[in-house]
Image (cartoon, rainbow over all chains, first blue to last red; front, side, top):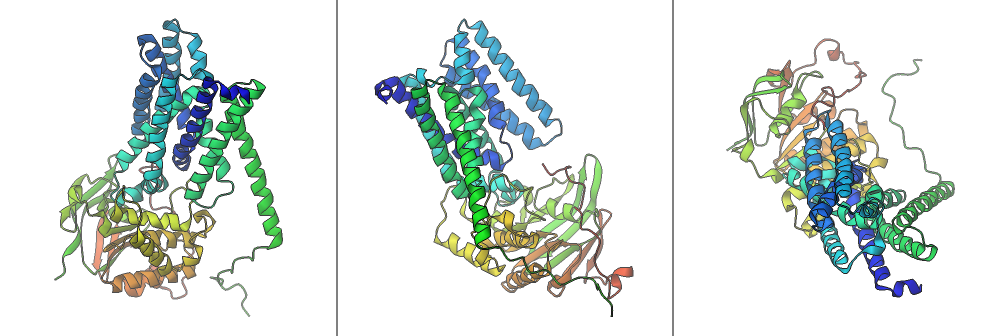
Length: 289
Length: 253
């Protein structure tokens, strides 16, 4: 526990908690859209931004936000056009992104930084980084909560949302940019290769036991917070990689919730067996007398 | 004085160069209940999708409430009921949450829901007989109950015009009756209805005019036509499957 007296550990913990809260709040919309792995793709693209930032000696996180946003907007435009070549275009973007990132980082004589962005490096978060993470994380959180009815409608039934006169394209682009921002701040915590886990796994866990969208969102945020906090705690005490520890805690909570939900449903079914729904009268004559 | 609610003038719709609707003109005035009938693949669903701006017109024009479609912004005056709930989302949603989406057209994106919104959602749920299922996940409902949820969503916005795409296709009898009752109340309140149907069933007494779409054109516009051929047989049981109107995947993204 003494470890948390060091400022760098406190920053690691706060950064992880902010991301643990914000990532599922955004991820729930991606899961609802069945785009659960989009964060992974945007993460690949963000790596090129990191490389460009390191090469240009600018803040890698800031350049990554810009490059990842452009990538996410491109992905959204490809998706909205709905052509069959969409997944090929996405593949080009993803692998182009990661190859470009690796190449640019290599050129920047800062090759050690690559690992930090691929797998996360919570303990090297500077006070400036923490400010960026907190401000952007809070912005994501507020946007996702305030726009919940509209974003829910768009992700649930896009055509209906359009006939409702909602600014569907704007909301989709907003979601794309928010994904890019979340990916970029989460990159410092869990790394490009594990980003999607924090957006998706808490949502997947929560929906094992929830009935509605609002409940799922609240439970996913609570689970994300728990995974981030306990992951950093485990990492500090067992001296494991913080990013991987956070993700493994999230997956462990998924297993626990899924198992608990199954047991609970089985018990309830045994306590009160559901009556078979009343059948419709036959539409054809089955027996002629 | 009845004013036109929907006007389609020489509407042409095509997908990838294949014409689906050729030169269709249609006017629906306030208070009418118009059924668009036709065989699978005749273009009847495309017609209402074009009216709502969900598919673009190659040529011709659509006017809604005296505004050209492109400049139409009063979407709260329209309630749309799609054929079925989208492919199903990954995250559970309660019946109430889905129905509450129907208030967005009236409320806008930024305003949080208020008392009027909650009351309208309650009333819409009650009108389709789903008040007791409000807290259940939509995915646990039967097909007919899901269809009623979508109708409640449209009614929650308190629209003046309801546009329904095959609302009774593959729906159990109890849901068809509940649906016909809700529609009757809506029409009694002065609402206008445009619906696509394959068969009318319990809706038939409500329909004031029928439009038959055949091979991309309008073959009949007037009284509800009598069923022809073996469909006219009083013992005729409607047993053929209700497939999607057109092959899926062309424009369903």
